[in-house]
Amino acid sequence: MAVLIATFVMMLILVLIKHVAKSKIQGKNKGCMPKRKSPKPTKEIYSTTWSGLYRFSKDEIENAINNDWDRRFLGRGSAGLVYKGVLPSGQVVAIKHIYKSNNTDSFSREVEGLSRVRHPNLVCLFGCCVEGGEQYLVYEFCAAGNLAQHLLRKDSVLTWERRVKILRDCALALRYLHHYIDGCIVHRDIKLTNILLTEKLEPKLSDFGLAKMLGMEESKVFTDVRGTIGYMDPEYMTNAKLTCASDIYSFGIVALQLLSGQKVIELDFDARDQLTRKARDVSMGKRPIKDFEDPRLNGNINRADFESILKIAVLCVAKSSKGRPTIDVVYEEIDKAWKNTMVEMII
Ligand SMILES: Nc1ncnc2c1ncn2[C@@H]1O[C@H](COP(=O)(O)OP(=O)(O)OP(=O)(O)O)[C@@H](O)[C@H]1O
Ligand SMILES: [Mg+2]
Image (cartoon, rainbow, N blue to C red; front, top):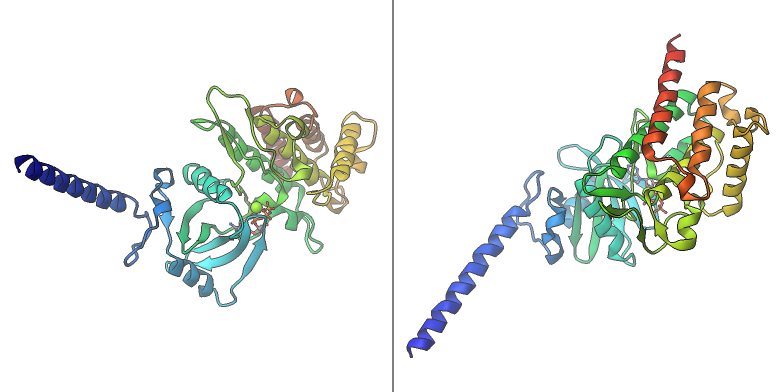
């Protein structure tokens, strides 16, 4: 009888401890933004790696999207549809509604990746929502859309100074990722549509759905080959060996596009090879700069800076990753060109 009573009391104590611990976790997981009534957290949102992110309810998401009277659709990507939204505070946001068919991999990578990184040139992830089988990501809103839209616009031209500044700031964001405190974060999807622009045309790197962290001791990792074909490192495509140099390759393609104003080449190997071949020839002096310069710039470039950016971009798109510069070297060169361009502007 005594043993039975003792066992019963022990079980009661265990149940009590479990209950207290659970309510503590719930308390911790409340977000950092304005409170809402009776949140109903689902199992998934207890992940500790997502701490610091606000968990929206589905009602909050729907209200935010419908708050904007014209329910503006911002775009469609491989992971989901993007809408403009307005939070009760008046803060404008971009809300990505993840396709149901999309595997949760990209959603959780994005949440885990972006919730920890913070840089003025990286799109900030404010929060997420997992409810009723739906997944949403809520980002800071970049009013001027993506870089591809601007580079290819017929009614206005991105000036030379603006192009250099965009490249310099993107290199800065990439330098932050490649030197992240826990190891190198490889973005894996650097391309024109993943560079968003604020109202003042300041660039912000977006989309961490494919990002991968290399540990301190790792210089490479073997992984599934994913990314956007025209921007993908050929070495990574053949041997699935992912290194920081894969981002450098994609960055080099973006730089060549900004110099030449060439169309988005997301799915086209031939267009990519033509672009890199032409860039090499011009950089070695086999062809005149005019052959590579975006005609819409009308010659309004700083020639010396154009040449030095072209040179570094050509090194970035070297077929072998060993021939490519590190992000520090890339940033240094582009920053020099930016400072020089600025001085010329003032004079
Ligand atoms: N934070 C944001 N602010 C403003 N517009 C955005 C924002 N995020 C995305 N968009 C717009 O929505 C479009 C779709 O974005 P998404 O990241 O889903 O796809 P993508 O990058 O164009 O293509 P993919 O998914 O194939 O890489 C973007 O091209 C951009 O124009
Ligand atoms: Mg994108």
